[in-house]
Length: 427
Image (cartoon, rainbow, N blue to C red; front, side):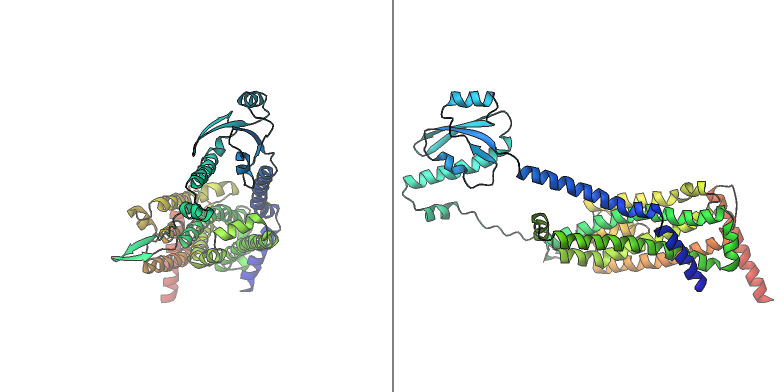
């Protein structure tokens, strides 16, 4: 057991202290910081933007007061009182546009002239002057402001999304569905990124020792089992270290910016507690099991490579499997009840990519979820045992044949070793 921890510690220390690990951890943070900076810059630019100058041409007194106190970025130029002056100002780009407003009794007719700067304000103009027209007509009918407000009060709409389960209607929480969908996206993308990263790390760990013939020295003092699981444990600890750093940075950023308007808007829209609960539920189980399965496979395929140059070719099957699962998962988000997605959600190598989307869409029962969880965990353990058996046979095989040929040779050696053990047991 001490040799197992020595190998684990060596793998962990060597990779955590490397420049590659530091770059791998910092790269997403730098990208997120850059994107956040752009969002903040453009949001501040919108806030600090100079108001668009407009002109109102109308005989109706007090129309300019309609624009006071709103959130729109408009300012009325009171010095322009005729349409010809407004045209000259628009030609000279002194204003962004002008409105010609005519009133006949209690009906408004409005012409908006602009060179494109007022396009985004057209819906606002429609609502604004519709309300103003309502007030004019209310004055004609001698209605009080309270009566006008009661007439224009919007109807109350309460949405209740339901699902049909066993011929009964079940109310769905749309917020919970959104959180689950976010968790499904998160786990699929995260699994893909970590598989691509850590599968390469462990494959290079094994292939580098094998290619330099150090493996023979290591295995003379440590068992193959200790070496195999020591490598796996070290890589998984590196993964947990990276996740812990991201969690610490995210938690620190939240407490630092939690009083900002941007964070307040997000927390009002998304239930952070529900999000964390969802991520710590089935999602984290699928994430850990999924990464573990592919890392174990990477260790096995890495042991098939004789030289470092062969590592990329050795892990190519793993990359294609992960890509297939990732794209099926995206398809499952759009059509979660399709037969293809149902079948793939119970195939352990694809379950971590597909099942979270089916859970988010509510197309799988609780029994189905637990069957997929148990099946994924059981398959992860099974593939660990099988990979270890092959690892024992091929870790010291140096062959220039292709991967299929190396696997066949490993299988022959493994059968020969079993037969030798049986003969020794009989004797």
